[in-house]
Length: 617
Image (cartoon, rainbow, N blue to C red; front, side, top):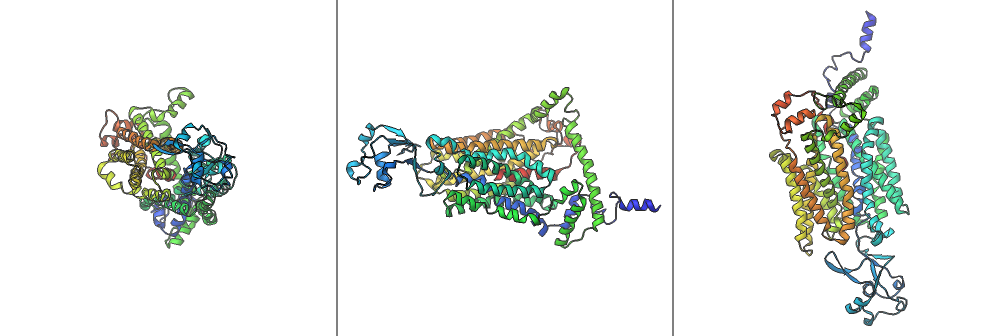
């Protein structure tokens, strides 16, 4: 009898009067509440959001477009002004619809003859004489340093024949994010949020500082790729904070999560205005990484992750620490540990059900791998997002929307020298547009629905950008304002796409669908620097036409989507076909047809916000 009582007392499954009110981990967090500990759990996310925009937007100030023209070494020591040297050595050409000095050609002359002579009107090149002179390409250049003292392109002469290497400075970063995105989440799930975040901060610091000091462009590109691979760490940092946050305030914190990125973008424009040398500016902007490194000894691991890993004693210590900081009471330590063991076992049993659902019930009633053989199973898994008509339409339309949004959003963010005469003010105001862009469309969506507002945002963005083509170049403030309108509405599309994607993909495919959609946006972001750096130098209208047309195509894709407003979230593909297919049923029929009810709103919200934090910077 005594042995049975002792066993019952030590069993983690034993119910206790003081713990019966805690039927889930969220109820524990609700008791802990919001306070200092919650803020400390969000500090990693805050510090990363104060750091990453300086590098994801780095091309705007580390490697902006600057005017340049051929350098004639024989005239370097002459008393001639720069305008007189250009008159004697640089031909005129039409560029961007305007007559300007050539950036890559120079007259073929004997410059040694005039090197020591003072300037006289007789040396001025008349139009008639210029028409008779032959030209050649140059191998060194003068750069306009009135706005930027040094840039990446200036240092390695990434112009004219080497201009094709210029966009890689920005694209390598975006390519790194596409490669690193799946790995950061896997590492954080395997080894914990705390140590992966800390290790990423240390590697980021070393790489960022090194990239500002190395003498070779190839090493800079390699460093940019590594920095891009680390960029998705913002996802685990966000999850760490959300996993320590009571459910009733997650929505508010989710809406506020984009504000630090916008504020950092505004600060980037300010620091770049004060410091015009790219290496020094990058070293300055690396400073926030010190905060990430210094907080490591004081950072707690996510107690939810610890519980799921079976480390319930450590999870209990974190929760009791939070309770002390917030002035609330939790069950005694031994009872709390037993409760966490119980919740972990319940979660593990639910996880098995979810796994069974995803592996065997994706199609509602049939097995995914029932076609015979591993090849057939692999093929069905690879094409799972396009297997049925409604799911295929949703997937292709969302992929198109995401790609067009990636091209336009990042193109407009990095086009300070294209759409404005003041790139610093453009960065400040375009970053400011992100705050209302992510928050102010919520009541409009509730009134008019997801699809209509998404298509409207794309359409307005497209109209604003294309209107720039018809605006006289002398109306600089009108061009500036139209670009900001485009940025505002494409930001609204970005935020709304996360909501639409999380609602349209069924639960069994939601994470996969969101990850693949985010990958489409990554591909778009890789393309945008080539439009700005290559096409814009030859065709002044290219950014407006391509970004505006891309937003217009996004509008067409948006209209292909079904509207998920006031519709139930589906769990299986069969339910999705019933709701959005050619023979759609009512919402009540869908709810009755639920095959396996999966109630994972916290997981889906966390995944969605992880992607948004990742794409936003």
